Amino acid sequence: MAPETTTLWRPTGQAELDLVAASGWSAWPPRLPVQPIFYPVLSEVYATRIAREWNVPHEGVGHVTAFEVRKAFLDGYEPQQAGGRELLEYWVPAEELDDFNAALVGPIRLVASYT
Image (cartoon, rainbow, N blue to C red; front, side, top):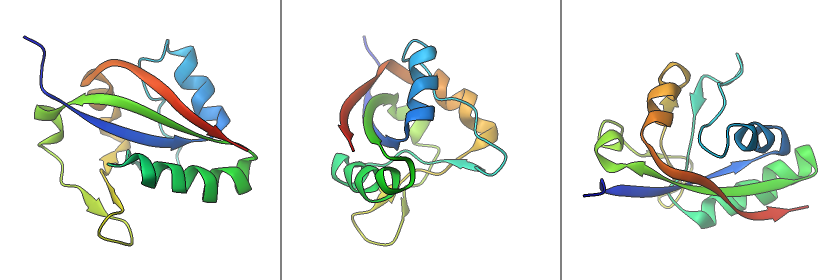
């Protein structure tokens, strides 16, 4: 029986997307020293907003990815509001990213790109 999963989304720039592709679409790359948390979001609409309003102006391109995470793993985290009731994200400490990647089920998928 397949594990119960939750779909999450992540807005990314090109450099991060290239690292995900290099992993075979199976893992998120380690955080940089200035990135203490990994923050996947709970809605495609929110991920699209970040990709268009932050990634595109700062990097020239923004991508939206989607992926499945074991629900049992996510139960150990509380969704955080990021400025509004519908702007929800998980805050995964950088040092727990390997555990997060181990909880992925299936590939990370590119669902949209913006310029």
